[in-house]
Length: 359
Image (cartoon, rainbow, N blue to C red):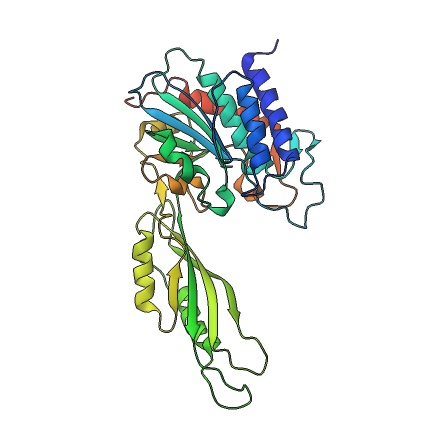
């Protein structure tokens, strides 16, 4: 005989199939937002929506602490390496293939199912919000960042991302730099001009070799990667401008502003402009009662090198935890196991059903 939880698991998988069939590239998530809104409304819930963000809440008391369950329903573009239709959910045994199945559709539907189960617990001691949000894959401003002021007090956030249901209790920050070196144009056949590309190479060599002194047990070192470069228009003209991009992942021992200041002190030729400095490392104290609850249940914790919407949550404790595996994200023939969804729902509910902040 099927239990309410079994039925919710089947409904979650069916909802995920709908999401896979519906393209939801970042900033084009309106159709999947419609699906999520309709799914929740059909359950008689009062659904809030702003842009392509959908959320519901269930309060036990106005003054109770609040837990946010959040994941994103946008996806990256499918690569040309897919051997299947990325928008057609297909099965092979326990495996469900489809774009966004792992990152982060499985978390979207599992957290929703957990919310629906948890709202039925009569003696729950905390308020609960479920939010499916947009633009995570492009770190956009119209996703979770836009609706946080609408959600009110948050005391803990669980961010659904594929972690194998382990607890990612820290996450690296992100800063992207646009760098420019300027030289002087000249004819390549004569000994004239100042080659901006050569000047850039001096500073790029510094980015490649420099190591910040403070490493993290959870997140490792600050990592700097020059990922794009552009110079020159013609083979016989010395380039007078070279531009390049640096991807920087920061640990909890440095703010992005501190890293930027250090970089500017060392560069010889380049001017650098950050696209943003507010995506700092985020996380939760290992002594937090929710983390301690997970550890007591045998659930491992670790530091995550990848960036998610958790980076927007520096004002309150947060951790990243969801079904699936990070290495499947953004890969061709992305997939999730149905058993991972079932296990994910069960683990969320086990951890949260009788959780108390003062335990």
